[in-house]
Length: 329
Ligand code: ADP
Ligand code: MG
Image 1: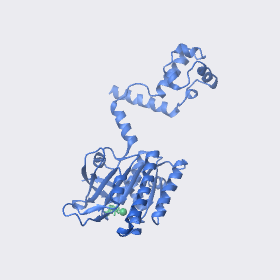
Image 2: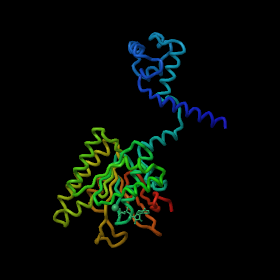
Image 3: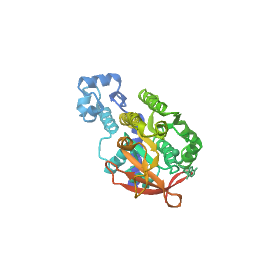
Image 4: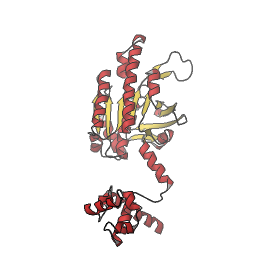
């Protein structure tokens, strides 16, 4: 009991420290511009310098006695020096590296969720739930980071504000706020789609938007429609390659989750197993770091299967898509 209380108080204290946002020496309580200047003279130029300083050293900069001790303590706190449970680090790393899918079991399949800095592709038949996963991601990203903005490039005119509101409500997020953080662009053809990605990069680079997720639903529909037949395959693939390279670059540079959906086509050459193959061939496959195959399961459930991940075992998980989000079977 006492331990718990202490821990809570400790956490409260830490929160207070964070609120002050001590980033440099002059942010420390009791250190004015003059004192900061004097500290520089004795080669103490940053918080770490203060944190490891001897109180006597600080005295020579005019910071004496209790004040010196308090300043050193504040610097140590600001730097979060000290021991913390390894579990905290693990949690933090996971949080930095991934955005939840909206369901624990699905997250487990992906070792924590959709990875930042790379491309995740979800492919599957019409009605398998790809667009739903995109909508859900747009909500979860905001729950994890209320300042996160989401760029949604809609190529099939299937973005639905009412679904955003429903899912937000289901997951406990204010629907108006959820809508505010999502920017939608309708792409009218593949050139336009590529242009929108360049525009997105410009807006992100100018820091006009704090974009944490880019969704393209779907990546391939325009390309497929505009380049039918074998004769046009080479130029289509070249263009798709360029498009995906750009997306990968943006993902990597700005630590963004890029989430793409993709359709499937019947594979006439395949005699056994699931006769469906994602559009885009090797180009799309190679540029997608994570590929998830989504299909209908029993009783209206969905089965998500991880395909050829670089660092995770292949596996699958089953869930329901409901009005308020994903639900375990
Ligand atoms: P895809 O993009 O793969 O073609 P969708 O993401 O559009 O497929 O999935 C459509 C399916 O999502 C519907 O058939 C239905 O099962 C489910 N769905 C859509 N809206 C809702 C809702 N409000 N409540 C529950 N399920 C929904
Ligand atoms: Mg769709």
